[in-house]
Image 1 (cartoon, rainbow over the protein chains, first blue to last red):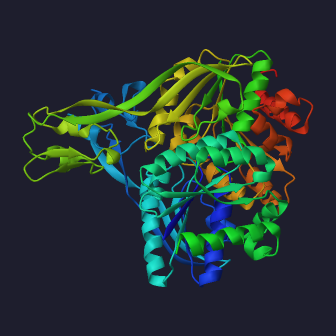
Image 2 (cartoon, each protein chain N blue to C red):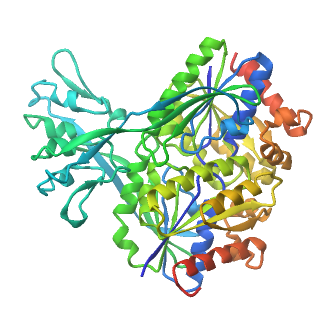
Length: 294
Length: 299
């Protein structure tokens, strides 16, 4: 089964839940695969203690970009007229391509009467596979700094995760999604079996989760809720659960041990298994594995 | 002269929106004409920290091909040139659009030899215009759920309004998390970047990526300040954060961890307004002093 952990709003505890869930599965079943689909800010491996062993690193070069030869350009600006992504800059009367805006669609090259536009392929990012210090195998989508095509990279990372799970005999893949509801999150949700929404009791988190569920509905995804840091505003936490209207897997207290576990780069379940928060997580994950994912 | 301040920083949930709302409030209360731009279009939330009255909403649309079956000869030229493989030629010569794959580039329309593709529109999101109680104006971008074009919407939000920016002393942009290309239009026009992080290994790792992006886009120009929020959390990351910040030749301001913050979120209040003497408010004022000094403006 592919389980996606997402939230809409950033910083609600996606990586906290995803890292501990991956670790829990590893401890229970001896093998676990996690996929970090937050390609712009990948942290799942960090939360699991970093890399013990790099298994594989693959460069992905799939970002096509246009390039204008200023020597042949006649300055007719047809390229500027047809580009729908603001990617042709015409300061000084000579057009040039803003790489960060270019989608590589080729409209400019088709329109150019002087034939002075060609293409090059830029690096999209990397797909890394590591054995984490805590144990689980982690596939990381790592976007090139300032890169686009995040969704493509997430697809490739998820594919790699599924392949590894099959090879290693892992029953589940945990996907740690990016914040937001855009392209990389849609790629994370596509083809998944289950969505865990992690919220904190604040209005922005409620709004983000609502928007996320709007997107998840298009994929007919089963969704469950974890109320993280619920004790910061217990009444509001219940309001969040009521408004979202999905089954609550559990309520996790805010505690300094979470920060301490992060500081030591260990999943809380490994560092302090007897702590009350660890017990809460364990019961949530047990229920998930036994009753929801079986 | 307008100064554009972008609040960003890599990791999600570090306090970007709180910092953006607070500095906008403080600048506005000092008599500056302030525009707040919420560019976190996936999940815009600055209006949940401020009392905002929205006066206008505009749809942001993009191109979508509409195929005129009467004119289409089924030559397949559009299908061959579509870089997202969003068009398919069915047996029998009919062309269909897979809308979820289409990025709206318009190449199909350019290559169709018989003019069978006409201009259709679809909604990528909305832009809302309003004013908050303190007097600052507000522009909020909001992506339509299910739409994949976050980067394109942010580009439109900034590029279409950059002339509006000129009417203000300060433009404060609340940015999405991350270090990808969707931040480029924001960084492109920013005079000062405030990078908000937290003292966790995750905060360090994401700030590293964010600062690398900033160097790539800025090539040594202009100003940035790092804000370490939730300062005081038990952590071994302080040293590493400080080293990273000084490697980039930057300074930082701390915001102490405070229980006031989560509570204020739920009450939809701003700490700089309700608790002006608190440590959090003092830090926000320090950020303002930095911004003013960096832009040669008396604070």
